[in-house]
Image (cartoon, rainbow, N blue to C red; front, side):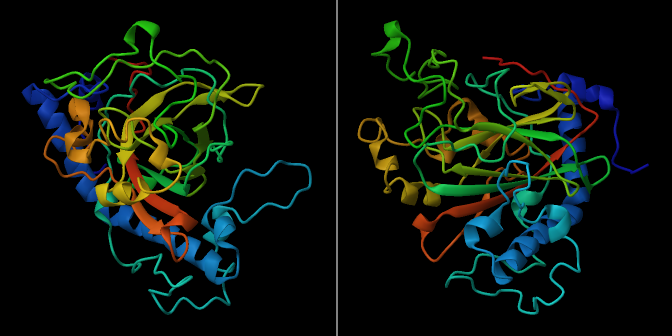
Length: 364
């Protein structure tokens, strides 16, 4: 048994977006943080291995858009791109030289030194609110969630580690959802009729926020999807870079289910929920993408503008760092090509307690 294990019952008191207040809650968070640091070397190597595998694909001659992530390919005899199992097989790239740790691809250094342990892989992303735009049903099981949404091509490589073992967690379902380039969520196109002229709240934790747009379209599923982690604890998605909306920093929502059932229509029904969180992007990157089409057409661009990370409403960006501010919930981004408009790939690793069960519903 590892020295950092602690009574799991204590976890029950830490619900979505509930700040630790009592001594017991604070000690639970600190115990989790200690566990995270214990896992840090394992997680750093885990992320480095994923980056090496991606680099090897590119250096072996695969096009960038294929090498970054294998998209969902229908069954029925159509050849599939290499799986993570194949990528991590030492024989797959026997003839590929990787002696140079910083090889350049399309004139940009897309993979950092493999020995570096990234801050954003310090495990255990704290639990924060799921927000008002999650759909308890209808999220499709798929890797490519973009559909026909226009925006900057973005691949997301999300690793999951169990903090109880410091090992990658295979066969769990990573469920993500995000806003489109102009700050809207699928199914929620407009504000409620009586709130069309609503102004952002002034003061308090909800400062800058508007009331959530109601769900009025029950068919839209764009920028929503879930995928099972492979044997190496990795779920990969093809999407677009998310836009922003009033009061919130640019973010991607995520849940991790350790049990679920697949429906006949290709969606899933969630079972045991181990984690609810949100991931972010560096403000400098956000500001550059704001200059690109269609992000320049965000309806609040010239009215209120974007909300920076440090001003994120409800303290969500702050809460995502944990009570002692030691976590980093920001994707580590790399260019896919020589310039930004060729797309991005982002890496992040989250640590979850696979024994924990969180509430799977929205708490305003």
